[in-house]
Every structure is written in C-alpha cells, then in structure tokens.
Amino acid sequence: MFSGGGGAYLKFTNADYTYAVFTGIGKGWKKEGVVVQKGGKQIAYLQCKGPLTSQLGPDFFDRVKIPKDPNESDFEIP
Image (cartoon, rainbow, N blue to C red; front, side, top):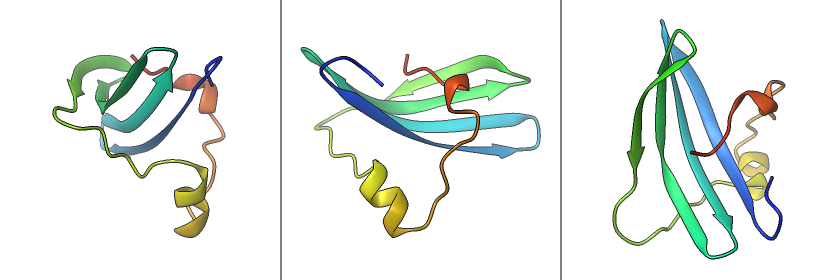
C-alpha cells in the first residue's frame, strides 16, 4: 500500500453510509481512524487519539475469516 510501510482497513455499509476503520504506517508517520462516507462522498474523518494499537492487518483478517475487499482501490488512507 505504501513505500516503506503498509496499511489495512475494514469497511462496511449501513444504508447510505459507508464506514472504514483503518490503520496505516509510512516513513515517519502512523495513522488510525474512521472515515465516514455518504453516497460516496466523505463526510467525516475521525482520527484516533492516544497510543496507536491497531490489530488490523492480513493476519487478523485471515484469523476471523474476513474476505479481501474486491474494490480495494476505492479506499485511500487520509
């Protein structure tokens, strides 16, 4: 996902809203948060506060049997 880093997200939809919980790391930065979209437009970005302790990633997704997003290119970490 990133040169020198990586990222993961869990995305779900409820009615007109799409929520993406994400984590990402790159050279000199780390981010975790939630992005909320309505009708494909971002309406909120809530960045996590405090120490970053994400469990998201390929190992977690495999362990709990969450399939890969077929539209993976539709989400970018803000």
